[in-house]
Amino acid sequence: MAPALWDGSTARKRKNEVGTVTTFAVARDRAGFSFVEVLIALAILISALGAFAQIAAAGQRLARSQSEAADLHQRLRVAVERIRKDLAQAGAGVVRGPASGLSGPLTSYVAPILPARLGSRLADAALSAFSDRISIFYAADGAWPSPLTVSMADVDQPLFIDPSTPGCPGVGLCGFEEGTRAMLIDTQGAGAGHQVFTVNGAAGALLHDAPNPRFERAYAAGNSTLIPIVQRTYYFDRSNRRLMLYDGHLSDMPLIDNVVNVEFSFFVDNAGTSVGPPPDGVSSCLYNPGSPPLPRLGTYATVGLHLLTAGEMADGPVCGAGLTAFDGDLLRIRLVRVSLRLDAAGDDVRGSGGLFARPGRSSSGYSHVPDFEITFDVAPRNMVPAPFAK
Image (cartoon, rainbow, N blue to C red):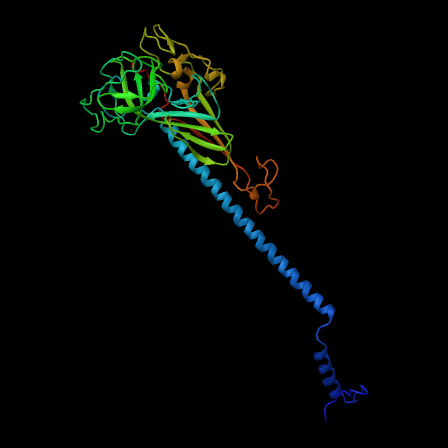
């Protein structure tokens, strides 16, 4: 039986069931999709693309925030490790060399941790106390003592030492070369006097960088010794939001960027006798003469360690003199607490609210990188009770 066909002139259809089905199929193929069907298909496609775009954007924000968070944590690790290492070594003394009256850690003579910026440039005034800076001193690795062999006639005179003294390194003048950071110490006891300087020349005698800073006084042979040291001064450059590192001479360099806050706290032994006394009948900046010597440091009305206030770090008793003067309480530091707060560099990963010191433009939890704050304690291993050298 022949298939049903449409008659173009009369639009009549033969009454054949098979032909009818075939005719309708042909008619539908020629008509295509309806407008409603196209709209539905487009809506489904747009929804799918929108969901995919949202997922892709969220992934990009998450990757961006993770990268910023990793960078923030890495910067913190660098700062923490550097500060922790220097604080642990604060006050370390010489480990070799001739007998020179210099024995034990530097805490027998000077305060190796001070809440101020010290050095040749932009030094804080003596007895200054700040919570956002710290200076640390310790003997250089493998340091040796070099006794002063000629008494200074005046404060600008070169420093004479004997390069043939047993134990002196062969380089430079008994190991001292131009650029060496050094400390001249009066070994008669704590607070008797010291000077930190940079060697400007080492031909026959050591030239120092006075008047930057100028020596406070002339030092005498027999009770004065030189050692090479390391100085680290950490301070918060608030305007540029950086933690800075200063070597005490000429170089200031940024250690980490995007710093929100830096704070150093100092805890001392509560007892006024926590620093060992000199021999009977001998006085020092921390003891009046007597038998036994009488402590000038007070005992704080607390049990255990006492947190020093800024005023207590400048109220005496005063050791040393001039620019090298320091408060006697600093000799009984037993623990230093360091607090650092950093934020993310990009404002696209900082939001608003208490988690951010600097509000940013991020509005998505996928891209938020909150400020990170860490507080850690360091107990300087050389800051322990010990009798004075003399």
